Length: 273
Ligand code: MF3
Ligand code: CO
Ligand code: CO
Image (tube, rainbow, N blue to C red; front, side, top):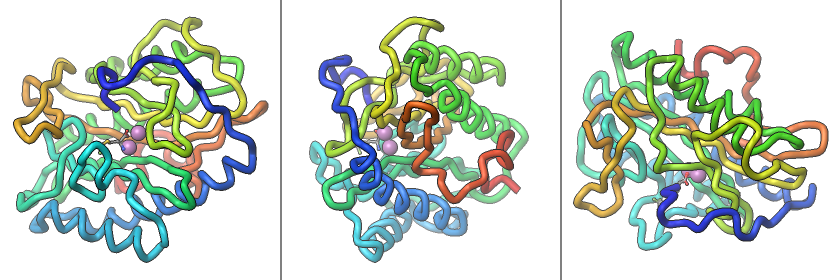
């Protein structure tokens, strides 16, 4: 989410456990789509083919895209290649060996939304590209680990940024996570940087996304002439993982990583063989 389009921390709608059950259904489709895209995102296909695949997949699972038509967004999902940080639109571009592709899906079921993104490396990857994608995965997990009732949003942001820096990468500070529920973007804004022990307290009933964008460049961004795609200003590579999570009194559930044993993937994302 682009932080400049959003006012900060105004109206947080806390969710009941019944609300979370609804959101979980949407999140399940997000997760299933992102897993199945692992065998689709390969060199030789066009990015628009990914969008069509997602459209078909979501339709079959009886969900809707929360992105299509959102503020005029034309795609079913966001597809961001290499130096595109976020909000890329599927088009006739043919994926090349070694491209880094982020697919971000917001999906609705019965008026409730879930949101998630994965980065895929198409074909052969250099060790630098693997380092970047690994950093993005670990930065997201670091944010998840701090998203506990009783902690603060500054704990989340500071641990995300620290993790990126530890891997020799930067975060894109202009993009942030967010609350989610009946709307695809709700308060609060979940910044990918911050100071430990500061910021809004995390409380039970919050449903949030954690979605740091990590780059090998400086982290500055600019808009593409298509008015949607957000480009890494120094044109370096970027990667992103996003999850939706629900905060309860004694635990936090990652709703878009439900069928995945996170213990097994502490170091690398699931599609990394
Ligand atoms: N799914 C994106 C997010 O994580 C929202 C993209 S808004 C769009 O917040 F309009 F660009 F699609
Ligand atoms: Co998203
Ligand atoms: Co999001």
